[in-house]
Amino acid sequence: MSKFLLFLLVAISISIAIYSPNLIRLYKLSNLYNEKTIAYNFINMDKFFFTSEPIPASDEPYFFEESYIDLPDKYILDGKEHNLIEGLEYFSTDGLIILHKDKIIYENYWNGNDRYSKHISWSVAKSFLSALIGIAIDEGLIDSIEDPATKYLPDFKDTGYEGIKIKNILQMSSGVGFNEDYADPNSDINKFGRAAARGTPFRDFAKTLKNEKEQGTFNHYVSIDTQVLGMILETVSNMPLREYLSKKIWSKIGMESDAYYITDKTGVDMALGGLNATLRDYSKFGYLYLNNGSWFGEQIVPKEWVKASHTPDADHLMPNAGELSSSEWGYGYQWWVPGDPITDFTAHGVYNQFIYVDPESGIVIAKTSSNHRFRAEKEYSKAAHIAMFRSITNHIQQSISD
Image (cartoon, rainbow, N blue to C red):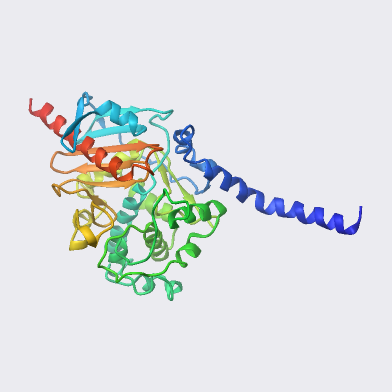
């Protein structure tokens, strides 16, 4: 064998050793949303991405009392009746749990899930990050939400985030240009997904984004905004996001199970949507917000922060803001406000993950899903879920009054 051929074989072998793990992850990512495997994939994300060390369950797990009721037969959407069970099936519901005050009144699982399944949260994780920002401000780690991000992230000067206020980042009004269309293979969010699978540091990706609009004037969903908030939190707390979450929330509200984050190859947690946890533990976070950040008398998240989180405070953040927003829903600090009326609020992740809170009725609904139709039916699926949740809420209130 010639020296050239030997060199070529060695070079090829080295290239395979270096690049094959990334190629394997990219191949797996391309099949992540396959209709036949999506439900399995969403409870096995550690097989597709780099992941963190576990966020340990609470030393004192809390178990809600259980007092079950039946779901209503119908829900109303656009003035028409729809079968609720058929709706849950159509949107590929993986788990559904309903709390009324301090009791579980409904719990069920489908598609291979059970109460121990650690399901990907997607953007529901953003609402957890919001709570941690509120805690960090209360502890004095962040001076003010009026501070620019670059006060805490000086390496973000000369990027799209230079001079952008933390408040505007919280409210998805940073002005940073970003295409969040999951149906577009060339969108920024899909580029980010491929970069994450390759192990590209999240920080490096965030620095590539440019500012397109004046901050604080237009509500446009930019997932990387949340990742930047996560970087700020890790800087001021001097610990990984998962550790701060564990110390400030997970250990304090009786979480029953371990959880974990998707990470980049440097071990940085995916704040924007990488949390994986059980449905029961997601519901506990909703219960915390139902009670204004208090957990059986202990104030975990500042009460004022919780209220501000689901209270749109500018025209571009209101529901149905028209040309001032790219969404029909309103927005607070990483929480959605569907509107009509502005009384309930929800965390929402792609493929229909929800933590829905209705303070007036004392109801929390947590839902995980693997809806392969989401990309094509995003707005319809969002509207249908709020309609289902409100019908369930009305049914429960009627059942109690009867």
